[in-house]
Each structure stands twice: as C-alpha cells, then as structure tokens.
Image (cartoon, rainbow, N blue to C red; front, side, top):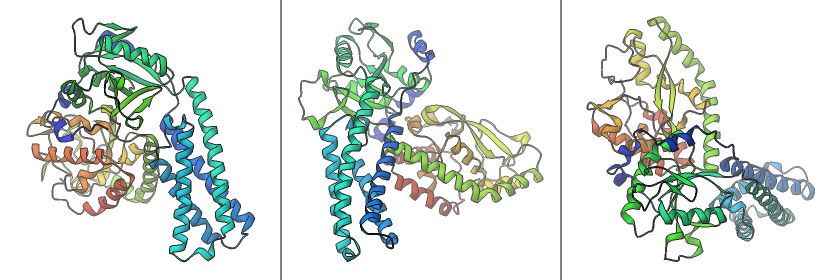
Length: 502
C-alpha cells in the first residue's frame, strides 16, 4: 500500500483543501438526493465473526459434554474460549473477514482451514508445554478439530452464498467517485460497468483539468468539480471509495491528489487499467472484477469499527454508573456557587468535520461564558469559578461527554475535539497547522494519545497545537484496540499532572 507521510502531508495542501467551498450545481444535486440504504460491510463482518466464534465454542463444549462428561468444565471452558479467540485473531490476520473474501471460494476455505489447523497445533503445543496433556481427552481434541473444520467450511459456504445474493441484489454497493477524466476515465467506467456494477454506486468524477482533455460528461457521468471540491463533497454526502484514474507515471499529480484527500476517512484505490506494468495477483486488490492498487485505507474499518463501537458503549456505561456520585456532587457544587445551567453545550467538529454538540460541566460564570472559545482560558482566569478551577484541573468537567459517547458522537479514545474558534498565537487552529483536519478521519474522543503525553490544557502557542496534532495523527496511523486500552489505563494517572490545565 502507498502511504502518505503525515509530516509531509502537513506541509502540503491538506488544510487549504479542507476549507468549505462552493460546489457545482451538479454536485449539489447529488448531495440533495436521498442516500440509498445498503447493508453495512463492517456490521456484516462483525456479526459473521460473532456467529462463527459461538459456533466453534458450542461445538467444543458439546463434544466435551458428549465424550468427556461433566466435572471438568473449569478447565475445558477457558481452553475452549482461548482457542476460539485465537481462531478469530488468525482469521482476521488472514483477511478472511472481509466482504471481498466472503465472495471467494477456494481462497477463503483454504485460509480458514489453514488458520483452524494452526489453532489446534498451537493448542496441542500449549497443553504439552504446560504439562496439561493428561487433562485433555484426545478424543475431544480430535473431534473438535474435525467437526470444527467441517462446520467452518459449511458456515463459510453459507456465508458466501448469502453475500453473493446481496451483491446480486445491489445491497452491498459502495458509494464511489472517480478522480480523473477524459478517455482514461471513460475506459475505467466501462470496466466498472462490465465487472463491478453490483459493487459500486458511481456518483461522478472530479478532475483539475478544464480543457478538452476533461469534458463535463464522461460515459454518462458528470464532472462534479476539482479534486479540492471532493473534500467538501465527501463531508456533505457519504463517500466510501475514491478510484483514481491516473497512470503511475503521473507521480506528481498522484502525490498532490493524495495530500489533498488524505484528510478524508475513505478508501483510495489507484485503478490498474492504465498501467503497462503487470504485477502478480497478490499485488492487487479487487473492486468487483476491477484490479486496483491500494493507496490509502480509512483508519478504522471492518471489524475494528464494530469492536471500537462496542468498546465505547461498554466503557461509557460502566463509567457513568461508577462516576455518577462524582457527577451528581459536581452538579450540586456548580449550582450552589453560581447561577446558571449546570451543563455547558458547545459546537465542535466531529468525525469527518460534522458539527456535534459537546456536553461539559459549566466551569465559567454564566455572564462571562465564551461559547465559541475565541479566547483561551489562562491561569487565574477571572471567568472561571472556584468549582470550575477544580473540575478543569481534574478533567471532571469532561465527564458529561460520556453521554456524547452513548449518542455515537464521540469515542472514549480519540483526538480531542476542539472549539470552532479556538486560536493559537491569534491564529485559528486550522490556520496554524496545515493538515489539521486530518484529525477528523476518526471519531474524536474524551481522552487521547496527546493528553496522556502531556499535551492537555492551554494551547497558546503554535508549537503546542502542532504537538497535539502530531500526536493525534500518530494515534490515527497506529491505532489498535491495545493502544486504546493503554490510553484508557494511563488517563487517570496522567491527570495528576495539572501543569497546563486551567
């Protein structure tokens, strides 16, 4: 996969392309159309994995009950759970839980069978290493291996038939645009119609060229604007996939396009229909029957998206229950000290630059509140109440954002959402740091990588906001559920550092 260096992209065109602009009438027309309701690939993948894991676990326990009998559940149950979890990890590592994989036959079955065999080998080796082989029935182990393998094959065949049926019905289409124009784009469109029509809902084209090489209408599809216009277009209507119709030899154009579109949470693919270079099949991925080269993926996708959603909801619910006495005491203290509402509501940028309303405990006097945060809070700021100083230093003022997490507007962990008019050295954040909007490729969070590394609180200088953005981009590029867990564990520890928190 081609990767965009975040540091180089920050120095490029991303921020300028991120600002809202006037779109063409053709683009506005598409934005006004109702969005076709299609099945979600990540949800299908998530449900498929859960069902598969339950199937394997049920088989393991059922064979235990039939051939071993009661009395050893305390040993067998954790062994079955661990092996099932390992199977899920290996199936994902082999990329078998993707819509494109579900459509295949030999490749999918081969990878699943190989991963399942590796699970059983690892389980056997682990029992031998820990000298627990005498505690496990060989009949059970062989029975689970054979029945589990057969069940996986049958399950994957059924899943393949279901996905192929949905594909035939057009229920798995991804909303796509083409970057490029002219005869090259016309050829690409013909190939899409021939081999990927049931996978792609093509919306139109974006091209910087305005001469005869790039007409306004290509094979029945309109040119909707320039590449920079695609940023605003994708923020006002869902876009899942960008297919680039440019030759690999046009390195400068491809790089310029990447640094502009890098801020969007979309998959970017370079069509291989124009390349005279022939790679091995493993070098390509496919959109339908169309071979493409992967240039960029949305940061969190497929099963990871579902897993993060579940993680957010569970942690938010537990936190609300455990911290409800703290939130109740804070609300009472705010009411007793000063007049006005307990909560302060503020507009901020969320995922893909969507406006969201963030909840916070009010920390300022009502007559001095700054809804747009055009003036940063400083040390001994007279606008902040006594209760406000305490809850800001300890980040208790952020606790109501747990309800934003339940609403799906925030994650527990992610780049912190900033106020719209927040400034550093009298410059708005997106003016101070180019590539700033790339932070919004994932859902913002209550805590994040920047916060546990000391970059919380006042951002009065350009260097401070740049450090925040750099840490946010590092988090996006290196996301994993283990990183989220680490940040969550470290957050209360780092709160003892109140040096910059006013």
